[in-house]
Length: 452
Image (cartoon, rainbow, N blue to C red; front, top):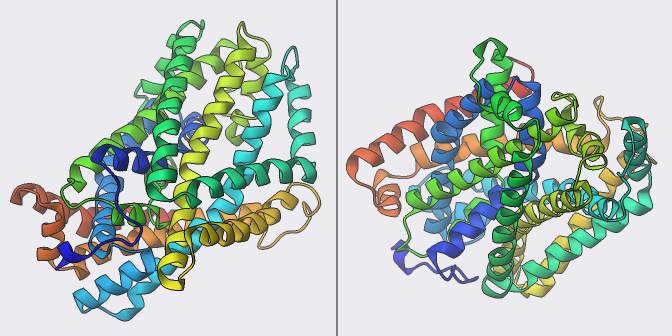
């Protein structure tokens, strides 16, 4: 009986604790850094609507599936998949889904930490007034000098990884829960304060119009697939984090209700980021479609020239660091749980070794921007290659596999017992997880590999 299975790591102390943890896992650089710039590149409101539909129809059903698989297995992703595979009498090779999730988490964190280090460094830049009075060429040069210095990048990468390792080594209650009880409320407070500031800017209503006006003429087939991919990746699916957090979820907590809350919170953060950024962009006459540089090369121009820019620049980059930290502890937790449960490591030793491996891998990304900038594999530097392999290949495959396993391999009795839903609602979820969600992820995958 699954009721007799207990996670060796313990359980979340409450429903609220799991909501904070799962929201922290989902909310990160993808919401505050990536969502605004891809919205800018894809025309605004119509893209946002498609994104919201994809969260509801694809992202949330897969998140429910990954959470229920984690709670039923009650262990790290590898052991959980071995348990569930045996229980379903499925092909033993399904346990490689657990290996892929843990590997994806470590690889993603290795470069994620480097980008989080950029945000950390930019907190200091904002604090010292580096943006004040600087024009666009000066801001771009600041960024080029910053990423061109391996010493600076290594320092901030190291600091961020040490913070992540320190939180994770404390365990579920003293580490993850305590940190997230502080991180997530602080993040939302900063978001609300920055939204308040955005409301005072002359470009506020222009920014809202861009974000929410439904101009379908700007929507392309590629935009639809991009929205689908962003909805999937923003929830942090297929990297083991949701599965291992589900393993710590008490039996009495409703998975479906919790996933709905987390999906809503994750989406709200992305929309609030857009409400903050686009009014500032329009108020300062900056290009709305400036791509990935929107945060580090475009917004500092605005912070350097607007009233209160010093304070709000600090707040913005602190918010970015908090969002990154809440996700980083989720990315490394599956590997730590596996080392503790399968290899007998103490939690402190597991956090040290998983963190050390991730930290070392991070130097491949650091040197990609300077010393090894000319080194290319398949047309990409090492940072771009890691990003492509994980975000565009490993996660879609993982999400697709989760949908197939939960929808087709697990028995209906087992999944229904975990979800404990009224029959009509359970049947809707089954329809989504068996057909619509895997089809959606499959089309995303075809798009990113260039078939569509």
